[in-house]
Length: 124
Image (cartoon, rainbow, N blue to C red; front, side, top):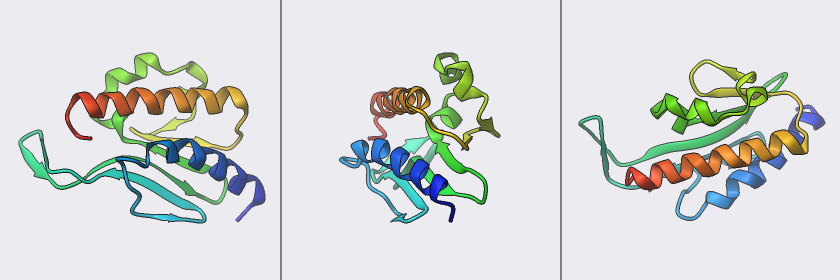
């Protein structure tokens, strides 16, 4: 794995780790990290024992930042800075190839907003 991508991964992982209590990782190793809420909930009429929140995975040319609150509520896009939205590929995956303090701060901010959304819905 490229050192630059591992650095990006490490910096983003540090931001996500702030949510490790009460969220818990299923995967936590070099190049892959994710957070889940392990709670019995009902979403869209389906009972679930866990809800995915966010995750990271090192790919060959970028770090994939998966942000499920956006998948569950697309209106969150209204609060995303244009630069961060430019990294969105698909419904909830952001391809991070470069990371500076500004982008780091934007990711930190959307994670906080998504965490509050999950709390409001009783998923955490």
